[in-house]
Amino acid sequence: MTSLPENSRIDITQPHTARIWNYWLGGKDNYEVDRAAGDRIRELHPGIGEYARADRLFLGRAVTHLVAEAGIRQFLDIGTGLPTADNTHEVAQRLAPDARVVYVDNDPLVLAHARALLTSTPEGRTDYLDEDLRNTDAILRHAEKTLDLAEPVALMLLGVVIFVGDDEDPYGLVRRLLDRLPAGSHLVLSHTITSPAMPDVDEAVRFWNEHGTPKLTQRTPERVARFFDGLELLEPGVVSCSRWRPAPQGPGWAEPAEVAMFGGVARKH
Image (cartoon, rainbow, N blue to C red):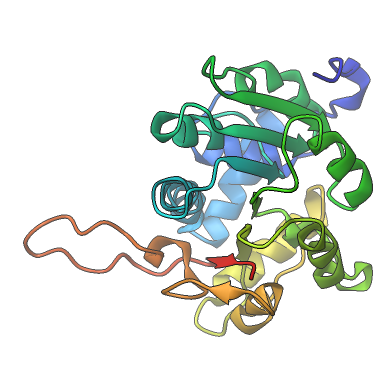
């Protein structure tokens, strides 16, 4: 595990996305500045807490499918976020105790709590790397210490590509990671969208980009779907995370409401 960060790396004067996300999910790893910004964003977009939860549940359903149905035993989870309930390794290792997971994040607070991500079954392994998504070569070099990159890997990019601007070639970045993974690997990706049907989301993002860090880039559902080009997109495609294979809840069950976080799962041929 990478050494813990110096306190100077954790800026508590400016709201930070990982800590606000933690606040919306009911966690305690956040500061007053994050809670104030989170409350203001929730005023602008009252459904924000719902799509934080929807994204987390999407992770659980996607990992469950990959382990139980696709036979995946290796996960590269970039943009991990603060530890919470049902992290990737917990979901995977409940079904396959020998599953191996490498977590990657560049947030110093996430790093400070990374030991919670490194609990593992005796049969499996977990590892953590303090690194930026853009440094694909460094990520893959480190991942090879835990994962066998000759065998299928699930590349998890949940709510992280939004922090890569259009001028930074986000599609090429994802492609460089996938190019190093063999056939049978999968991409799991979620992304905040912009849509005429959800104007309050755009207003909340504008507030965030004026006051918070890191800045984020919204994309339309069509542009989110481009991240899966060349892959076999699994049903139901790129949809609201709340609507990716939700479990029916009995009589009278209705499809969940759409949220402004879209995601999908795809297989590399």
